[in-house]
Length: 264
View 1 (cartoon, rainbow, N blue to C red):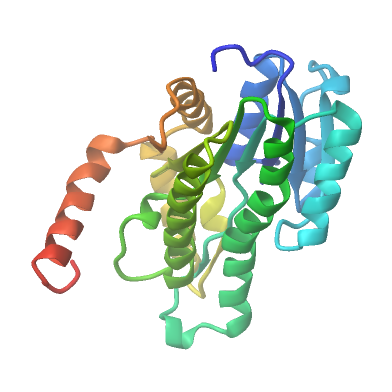
View 2 (view 1 turned 135 degrees about the vertical axis):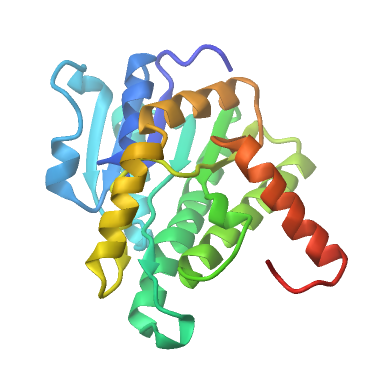
């Protein structure tokens, strides 16, 4: 799809970071957007008054609640009449502690927001898209952590692996019925956002170090949004922001699995 004008996009986690950049890119393409975030104030401040407010729906809600996603869909249809793009983007990092030292509340929060939020989005919006029977796109935000592992952030990495797997299965399921929906999974890495602030740790210096690293080495959210739309135009399934960096790590992990070696 090269013509985005007047198309309707739903974006979760839209108040900041990649979600906000995607929203702005959509508006630059003269698209209509339904933006959802749990932070109502930040969401209201995320979009400049320079954009046509008739093309914007702001919805304060939590992707972990299926009822919020269903209401978002209803409001989007009522305002815009259709839905062409779903960006399942909302996510949190969770706890750095080993899995045995994390609380069930921390683990469940990550799974509810990252994984169930994506599932709620798919279950709610894909049937709408199938019923419309026109060209539609689902873009699920995973991460490098959705293909790789290593110490720390166990719940986050598990949720992102699950998002990658669900996206691959969704792709296959929709292919079987020759649907009108193209599926992509976004694999960002080192993006300059506030995501580290959602890390739960007793050592604030770790968060400060992550934020400083991202300021120096991180890709801008705007560059990620540009990469996403380039991938959409080419109907790519895997949309990487740092493929050259990820590729050898993914290859090394797969080789260790195939040769029955311990994880890296």
